[in-house]
Length: 418
Image 1 (cartoon, helix red, strand yellow):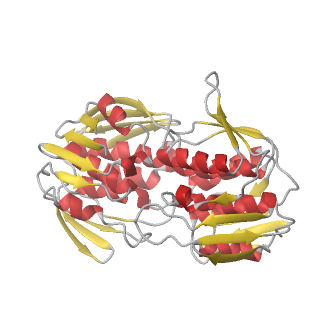
Image 2: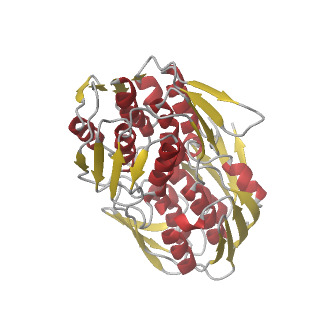
Image 3: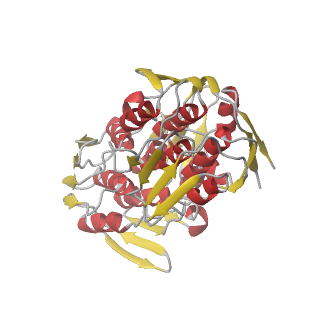
């Protein structure tokens, strides 16, 4: 099993490029199921979750090819013949549920294992199922599998009981081939929703309102092939900005979109960072005393739950006391115990953590429990005195492309070992 070794105490300096967004790429890959023509996708990050999704689509009959002369990959679902997502392939990735809507819309049947993934809390699929049933699908759950059939999905009005990103994406993809008009109310507003909608529109879909809480989709008889490039990863961007703010120094991030990170950038400025942005670049300088910042996670455009753990590490050495409240997932404070192994002063009361800043963390042997907790421990290792060893970094590889190489380019003393 691989580990990361980090020798802390070095400010970050330099320039790197941000990869494509995992949370946008996964549903866009599933969009290939909606047409028998080829979908060429650029700016795909090299991540374990992407590899898992491509393998899942491939075993369904989707051909996956890459051209060394052209960036990205090309998917063709012309020979789609096995609308099944087996447990062995989806147990590590909750995003596998995203094949359900496209399969029902395109071939009228699907058998999908209930998904697995990070242990950060319940992410029920009931909103997906209720929405598809409202569109006319017959769905049952037996022996851990969702079994679904539909002669022809029908457009309808669907109101989500809770805001769900993957639920919005799944039903949006199902609706583009449904008969009639579908209206999704209380829809998620994340930028990744807009990216998927833009890809579908490029394929011939008619969608209005993506990025608002009401999305209207006018079903089409078919979609066609297209070329599309995935948006930059706003969470990877935020993670590197937080790491530089915590360690001090100066970095420039290229190929990103600063306008998707308003809440995160506001908090980093509150912590003492000086930030300048252009249309695809962010320049951060940190030379002030690090200040503690309190925050509360909430759906976009509020502070993202996927950045909560990274700010927890930053607050460990901030001046003052910070209060972090997690409202999205009920089990997303597992990194607290690992940070406390590094001498962090943190108390947890329900879904709230109280962090009292101390002069420095101590390097220690710690264990990653989920994807963003892994990033939190990397930041903690960068600011700690001495050496930090992080186990179970396969979580990290699910969502960060070449993170140790990028940090090394910024001057960090970090290496991967077996």
